[in-house]
Amino acid sequence: MGKIYILTNDAMPNIIKIGSTEKNIEDRIKEFDTTGVPLPFRCHYAIEIENQLEKEKYIHDAFSDHRLRKNREFFELAPERAVSILKAIGGREISIEGNVMIGEEGSTISDGSIPIIIKKSPINLFLLGIKPGDKLIFTRDENKYCKVLSERKVEYEKKEYSLSALAARLLKENNSINYNNRSVQGTLYFKFKNEILTEFREKLEQEFE
Image (tube, rainbow, N blue to C red; front, side, top):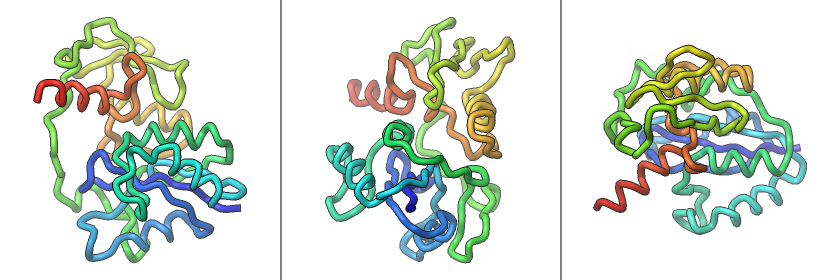
């Protein structure tokens, strides 16, 4: 029984690593924290499954158009797109202790101990053509959705949230994982018209370049 994982890195936005291992996920992550990588990786999602190498190849083939190099496991892809494939092939989801960074010694590195890397301004839903009252679907459970209130606020169960705060709540409810708001980029976990918000934003920006 092996494991397939999706890793993200704050220093490499829009790029994920999809790999497999028979080791503990935390041990695998700390192996990647070398001098050639500016920040440690985070485990976005992982499953335990039989024939993990065969399943890993299937996933790599499915996203071959997004692969950066043929001999590397890096893909330019929203992590939740890869999550949907991992959920489809079965296996048992592995719960991780929050979406934390793990250093080379295996210790957890707090978000507050590193600089905040900001590549883009906070998302403005209205600039994406999303209007008050529009629904945003939670990527992990399409039966859950929120209603847009303003440029950066949504409503869920009659309470107002930022996308990050709501994503943290729903992830915790869905997987019993202790996410914190800083570690969760809310736009990764909601869809509008079947497009993840990060991808939707990238698409619109490319059209106006």
